[in-house]
Each structure stands twice: as structure tokens, then as C-alpha cells.
Image (cartoon, rainbow, N blue to C red; front, side, top):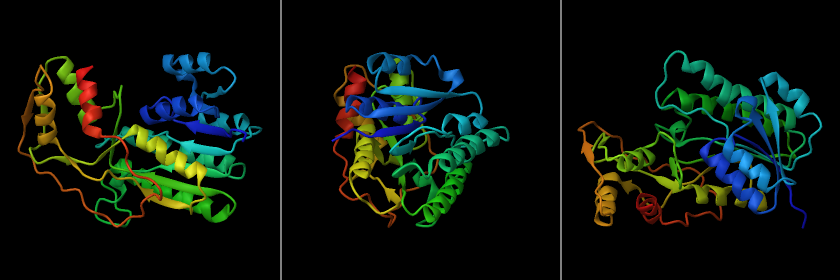
Length: 293
């Protein structure tokens, strides 16, 4: 069977890069869209040297470059990893949110939606802060909700193309340098610093990046109905218990200081789960390995 061609955005980000590396190792042909400022990204350059015949990039300076650059490409699947995430925002962040989470993916959708078989986009469970409906926890989630409504428009008008939104709470993986709790604790551990955690009662629902990649491959290889799907680990991680477990297995202990701020419990939402998917990785063991390294 001939391998298909994938168009990716957001490959300089953590999840996007991990999927890019995986797809190339499985002999897919990959084209990614990269801002010209990231042309010398060392991780992408390393993959280009390794997979010279299977991986090429489309470099853009500004969004208006997309129309010319995407005009003649032939692709089978488009996966949008590009996003700008901040839990809180300032006035000046609004421009970046609109550009990264709404304008850029809309422009790409408009140019390729008639050329592909399937389009996969990523949302967040912050889009459902109050229940099943689209209720935005923050401006980041609001822009994700706005783009989901836009993608619904394309889904309605392009009947031959399958559109998917994948949503989850938190993610983690090796070499994760994002400003999220587990990478922050790990970085502070390396530097022998104390990490402040908002509450002893904090719980997170985290899935490993490998499980996200598995979800993408399930969508690619199966004839699933278009729409939004939910990825969730079988159990939440209690951060205080996680720290205790890690410290029992580490020679040098993790230093933490718990604050007494209120935390919201993770709601059990009745959203559609991705068929044939379940988390495979033991997350606590994966996290422990990162600390031992």
C-alpha cells in the first residue's frame, strides 16, 4: 500500500514535532508549513537530513504567502498542531490568539479543504468549562471555540472531506519543555529548586504524547464519523500522591510547597470518546523515568 502525504502545521511545537518524527519513521511523506523565522530550527533540520526524500517544508513570511505556496500541493491528510496557549492573557496577547488559533488555520482550511480526505484539528477541554456545551474557561479556549465553529462551516460545505476535533485536558512526554506543571517540576528538580503548587488537592488528567499520536493514527486508518472526540486518561493524577510516589523512587527528593488556593474538580463530561482508542502508557512510570534521567 502506498504511503499517504500529510500536511502538518505546528511542527515546532511539542506534540507537532513528536508526531512529525513518528510519521517520518513510519514512511509517510510529510510537508509542513513553517514560519521563515524557524527555518533553522535544529530539530527540524535534523529530521530533514535523516529523511531527505520524505520531508519538505513550505516556508512563509506572512499569512498571505499561503495562497501561492499551497496552490499546487497534493496531500491526503491535513493535521493542524499550530496553536498559541496561555492560561491568562494581556491586551497584547489578543492579536497572537486571533492569528494563531483562528486566522491562520482558517486560511489553510480554505485553501486545502477541497484537496484532502481528512482534516484533524486539536481543541481543549477548556472549551467545556461548565459542561457539554462550548463554554470558554479563558480567551485561549474562546478562540478554539471560534475556530471549531468555523471548521463546522467547512465540514457542512465539503461533504467529501472528514473533519475531526480532538480534545483532551493535559499532555506530557519526554523532552517536554512547555510551561506546564510536570515539566516545571522536572526543571526545578534538576536545578534543586522548590516548586510552588496551588493546592494539595490538585488533580490533573494527563495523557502521554504517544497516546495522542495513536489517536491520530486511528482517525487516519478508520472511517469514523466527522466531529469532536474526547481523549481522557482512565484516572486523574493526584499531584500530591504523584510527588510522594516519585520521591520514594528517587535518591534526591522533589521539593514542593503547597499553597492553599481553591481548585476546581475535573468534571465528568458526557462527550463522545474516540472509538478504538484507550491510553496505553503508564504515565507515572513515564514521568519517573524522566526524573531518573
